[in-house]
Image (cartoon, rainbow, N blue to C red; front, top):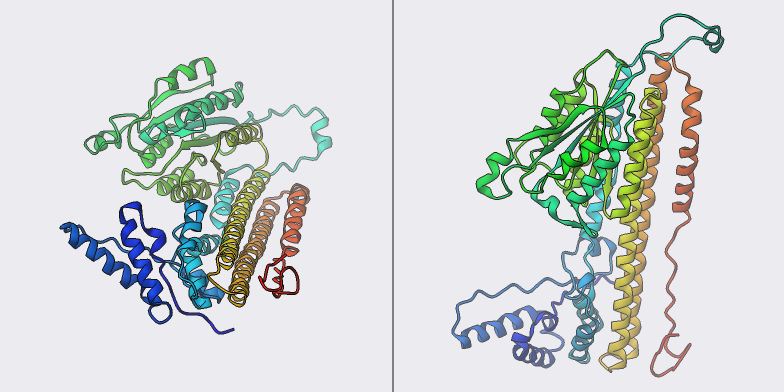
Length: 532
């Protein structure tokens, strides 16, 4: 089949009631020029608008006609196409689409009729390609380096045989490692936005209350530090808002009865000086001998730095200091870019990034953090492995979500194009031969797009599995170098390795099913060309 390179912009579907009369005139001219001048719909629309503007005596500037998808049949061209149908995606309005199809010129060539349909409901896939590209070649080296730095400062694994411990050795045992938690609360103006039935600030305060109750009271201390709470998010208050961060509780033993009133008074108001908050928190962290203190910073935020600071640099400096701090992030309904930036804070310090997109996500996040408080005395290698597993699972979820979104988008587009093709056939706009040809292009487009999504899903999933396995081997090697037993890590990693293998097998068995479009007359009404 030859590649189709013709492109049509359907002006009818972008017209609003104000231009209804102009649209009818444009459609008349399209009907009068079916064939050679159908490619000049843009020019016809511009001429009509110019006449309308001139007749009204206004000098308003004409708006550009949105670019529609071209009727490509090659996958590479479909993925690169910059166009998008007027009623694609969430803008779909079935009644308007059918109205536009009713006005479609009769007797268009197959490629031009197909372009007309794409101009109505055709999707754009450039963002999907970019999303998959951003996930390829995963790299957990920064996370691994953060944990190896932690392991370098931890006491070596115990070499004393179990029987020696049972013999009642009277030597003084070292004091158990203590836990110090610092919560950094974002009080920028955007935290006043809604997440479900509450504001993000209300959810953040609830999270702090529950986290305070999860910290071991006998060996833990808590500090709550707030930033963005001064001034406002107006330009004239930026300097004030970006220059202040303060502790509203601790550091002291966690007491929920004192923590709650301390944070209840905080209002969402200003900018987001996250880097400053991390730097100031670092100054108050205990810096005892290796193995005596565990410092954890928990950032609760819905956005990223907007005061000119560098939070990632600040995070690295705090982590590399004697305080050796891991940073965990609870991201409340953040946009894509803020999520990437906040995730890097966790990545460079060996912490966890936990997005909260809906209220129920918060409970799981808080449970995970509570388990982290309970397990802070585990050997560093076990915790490093758990951190690596969590990062791998997060990337798997992101990959699966993107795969599902693209497949659903292509499926939805297929359904809408197919219905539109059937409609113009029933309206007598095209004959059975054109209906069959256009239908074959719709089928081919769906199968190619679904196949592309499956291919990237499998390809990136394989890379993720390889990267996590290499990371595990590096942790194991470092652990054994310091005298630890590799079998302990093998046992801990076994369940996740099986889980990863199952996911890969599931991906390998997925494929796009063939869509069978019968010849008119084989099934159904031979003259109408109806499909079963």
